[in-house]
Amino acid sequence: MQDIVTVVGGGLAGSECALQLARRGVRVRLFEQRPDHESPAHHTGGLAELVCSNSLKSTKEDSAAGQLKWELELMGSELLECARLTSVPAGGALAVDRGEFSRCVTDRVLSNENIELVRERVDSVPEGPCVIAAGPLCADALFEDIARRVGGDRLSFYDAAAPIVDADSINRSIVFTQSRYGEQGEGDYLNCPLDREEYEAFIEALVSAERVCSKDFEQRDLFCACQPAEEVARTGRDSLRFGAMKPVGLEDPRTGRRPWAAVQLRAENSAHTAYNLVGFQTNLTWGEQRRVFRMIPGLEGAEFLRYGVMHRNSFVDSPHALDTTFAIRGTSVRLAGQITGTEGYVEAIASGLLAGLNTYAELAGVPLVRLPDTGSLGSLVSYATNPETVDYQPMHVNFGLFPPLENAPRNKEARRAAYVERAREDLAAYLSSRPELLCGRAS
Image (cartoon, rainbow, N blue to C red; front, side, top):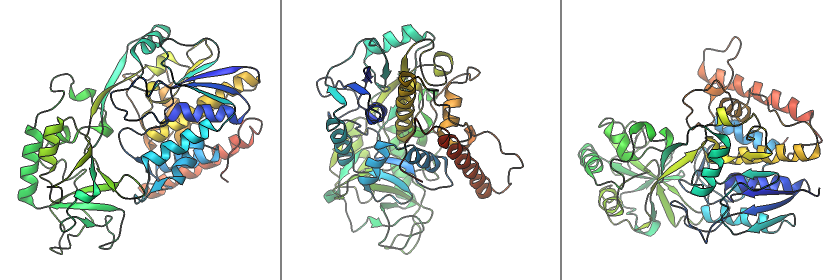
């Protein structure tokens, strides 16, 4: 093709979109502002840098997140393949070595002769066919230009990231290895056990600690899946003990009993030299993070390789601004990734893939991609572009977005299996009708 497609943003969505277009012979000019222009959350200039966590969530077949991964494999996702190649142990989840994952994606982009990577900031929507995947931390000037084009309110929410500690600074005489319900000494997580007194003292310190943003947001502005741990603790003294710190399925080898609460640590890289505090996204100042998190047994001497941060994310009112292909109505400009309000790493990859496919379809003069709404991605797109959606908020894939089943089983496991079976049948049938467009790797 003679057309050059401009993709703005070298994150998950932009990188996937560029690679999908390039695979189909489309020339792509991919703009990424880092490292010359930093963001409030990124730390490197690598493409597809993961900011909040290194987990891409569940791989279980009976979960909406697992189903989304199956769909992406069927459609030939480049970034999901990179994630598989750079994975680290994480139980039933797909977690990656952040650095290796970013390098894998960056290498694929740089080695593709159809992609030109341009390290510049873009301050206005480019002319011609383009995909804006600038993320929720989109440069102000560009976001204002997008807002003028789509109209409506400028929406936002607050997101947070968890701290990362040096593996050598973890006290292994206290911290034990075990996945929930696994055998001692086995598993993919390290566990810091707390007794009742230790837990109560930790919660008291957590909720009273100094925060970076104390009055700039309300509870409704916090994204539910990434709420700061201190905000969760404020909802009730036992909220964390029944959430991120639940001890169910664990046994402290020092006592032979289940601890009152536990903080789990997940490996950040394949060398296991760094661990993040699972579920401990935070808005505490760096000094307070050092003080409070060192109260966790086993982390009393923890060295922090990266402190948790909180940042404001912006997105457009997609149901009233975009069509069902995430294009600004009446234009050849598409949005992809978290700027559309579709929240989550794999969801961002999926929206980038879909933006690439639809941009290619438009250039090739073939029908646009309309995935069945019975699957993870199709139902998410349906929710995010439905004009009847009110009070639009960021959303992960979940079975609540799937159309109801006829004669749905009462048993939850059976019902989920039925959702997955219907989704796979419908998507396989649809993809088989589009051989001119879709080329997957999975069967």
